[in-house]
Amino acid sequence: MRIDDPHLSWPLLTLDRAAVEHNVATVATALATAGVEHAPHVKTHMSRELWERQRAAGAWGATVATPAQLRTVLGWGTARRVLLANELVDPRDAARLRTALDAGEADEVWVCVDSPRGVEVLAAAFDGTTHRRLGVLVELGVDGGRTGVRTVEGVAALAAAVADAGLRLVGVSGYEGPVASGTTPAELDAVARWCGLLREAGAAVAHRVDGPVVLSAGGSAFADVVVRRLTTAPGARVVVRSGAYVAHDHGHYAHADPWTRLGVAPLRPAITVWASVLSAPEPGLAVCGMGRRDVSFDLDLPLPLVARGTDAVGRLGRARALDARVTALDDQHAYLHVSDDDLAPGDVVGFGISHPCTTFDKYRTGLLTDGDDVVGTLTFELTEDR
Image 1 (tube, rainbow, N blue to C red):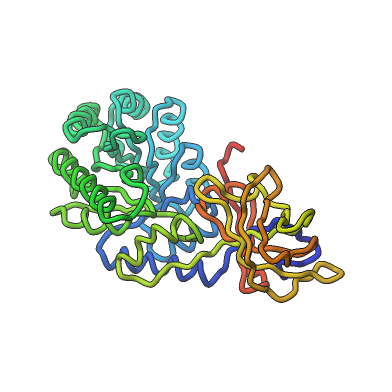
Image 2 (tube, rainbow, N blue to C red):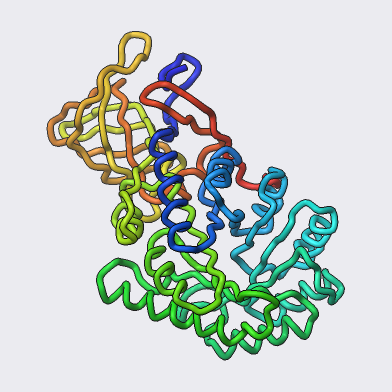
């Protein structure tokens, strides 16, 4: 099958198989060499097929963002260790987690707390007992950022409450993303200082942990800083949660690129969204059948990469370079400024994206490709509930 087969249509999401394999292997090797464990954030794709590749490459477990994602991933049957990198404060979710763990659906699930309420909900659901399959991480936050206790002293106090409630404390966690928006030396230094605070938080709670204290952080923009700073903590167990690397991109993560700063080969953008030119209504303008419902736009607009003509039955012709840029998106339309007026209705444009997470979540399926040949189908399961 090819991406232009008669039963398919545009827009279409494809992932280049060679790029995916390269990215998974490169990051797995880099983290193993650094001596850290990897729980890739599968909220990026919510694809069982992509998770299996990450697991086969040595991932310790999977990371999720919501209780619903947790239930979906547990349902895959092969993610035996899962980290919920978020607060769990709904008693219904805590009760379902207790049921799943009692039934042996996972070997271990770690959850985060940043408030007495979170501790109370977990303690009530687990009857104040130290459930061997449940681990609790106290989250350290960032001033002005999202979740997480704001001070090391606050982390230590909440860790005491976790222990007093009879829950099993495993360490501390956090997300360094809100610390900086770029990769200037000053911004990287700011991320490093926050990692120092996470180390301090780990040291402050280590006496309450049975075994090495866990330090967990690491999105996909500053993974190099996280690895270098956290691995210097004596006796700590570092678990990194980077997830977007599996697909990489042509925008945000291409610019952030922590992996080459770790000294490994550059990652490769895997995603292309293909869309047809619907109209060329005036000089310098082409309108494609792809919009906010088809591609990410929260960080950057999509990037036109190549254009291809089509024959009388819709088969794609040879790819050619394209001098164009996207200036705006509607729900189902992309506005392209074209310098050479070389696009015509019926042509197909391949777009690179910025921010894989918010492209994946617009599709239920995607195609794994080798050139124009389809070599696999990917399913994206947003949650079990919808």
